Image (cartoon, rainbow, N blue to C red):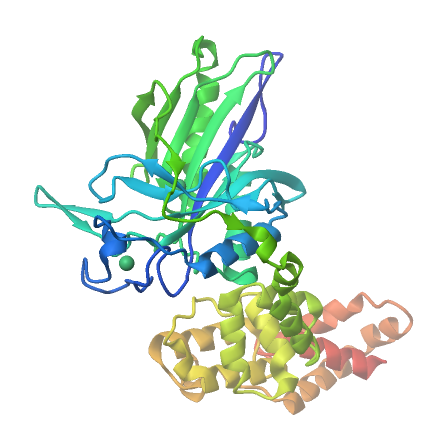
Amino acid sequence: MASELNTKMGSTILTTKIGLEIHVQLATKSKMFCRCDNNAEGKAPNTVVCPVCLGLPGALPVTNKKAVLWTIKTGLALNCEIPKIAKFDRKHYFYPDLPKGYQISQYDEPFCVGGYLETDGAKIRLNRIHLEEDAGKLIHSDGKSLVDLNRAGTPLMEIVTEPDITSPKQAGDFLRKLQKIVRDVVKVSEASMEKGHLRCDANISVSDGNGKMSSIVELKNINSFRFVEKALTLVDIKLKEEYAEWPEKNTKETWGYDSKADKVYLQRRKEEAADYRYFPEPDLPPFDSNRLDLEVLSSEIGKDESAKIQELVSINISEANARVIVNDSKKYEIFDKLSNCIDDQYSPVLATAIVNNYFGFDFGKDDFGMSKEYAKAIKAIRDGGLSKPNFSKVVDLIHKQSFTYDKALEELNIEESSEDELEEIVEKVLADNQKEVDLYKAGKVQLLGYFMGQAMKYSEGKANPQVVSDIIRRKLA
Ligand code: ZN
Ligand code: MN
């Protein structure tokens, strides 16, 4: 595919460069510069506001210390340097969702500079991380435009990469990894793209290594990782196809992405960079990071992760599985809820089931009422009574129809086989295949697969292969 890595045009190699700007909404209790509730979800428009976030004259901002601390913590997790002094600046522009006429942001002295994040062995350098406030939201309907300022003043962390990303796929990988870090390691944001907690702008350009370069295309506000990859892929291909017509003077263009049509379209050409007339925010003092103990802050990052991993390892879950579960808050939640209903001896198989997606659906917030029923299925799979495919069918019914475990078995006409039954089946298989047994004992161990196949046939596919294989090995030892 043209989008993957570098594309050869005759003897010329075209190289793609992508840089990202990611806005991460911080999950602090209050907003960035006032005490308004930072969670306006489900609240009526313009009800979570005060003179500060409405931008009324004379209102004074007060910095939310937690937001600063969380930004610096994120910087430490991403290997950034924390400058001694940081400050806020006013960034001026006019837009109806910005009542003050400026956004409080950071210009030349952000909280974090440099840093990097590795994805698949590639080191993607960061330029900076700064902190700013969000604007309000415009709602267009019936030919009218309404403004909701509930979101105005929400703390946003802006993470800017260097243009080190070399393919759309790598951009997607980077974003997924970054999401995990802010959500599960430093835990500063819910980082849901659908809810707009994570918003991504991407810059892409292509060069030929001989001083010729395409225009720089900016894609703005794309709201899913998949769409970021798709839009970048389309632009990447387009820029490469247009190689012969690349402009003498590079322009900056903003393109949009229509996810329904899976097409990109030109929004505007930029002649010059916008002049935001930045100047230092006079109402807020500069921030002196000497006041922080960065080592303590560093040591807090991911600390409860290692404790949680140890806890899971102590109940015989493999470290690899423990890591996967602890690093994914959703998986951890499922594990936590279901493991409360079973003995620790069943936890390893629960962990395997979660890590390998035996549950073929997404657990929602309210799906844990059936925990006890899922626990029964987990016990059955471990004790050999259920095969993996049957397990999936059973939990699916528990999930979708709120069936009990027993009712699901009945509905599917599955009989749980007990370990005793499996022993019997294996004994029968071995008795019926005496010649193969002798060969196996003489060293032809590959016959294990044959015995397994026979046993699965005898059990009509109901048996758990792992348990069957254990029994066969034991009997033939
Ligand atoms: Zn407010
Ligand atoms: Mn920004």
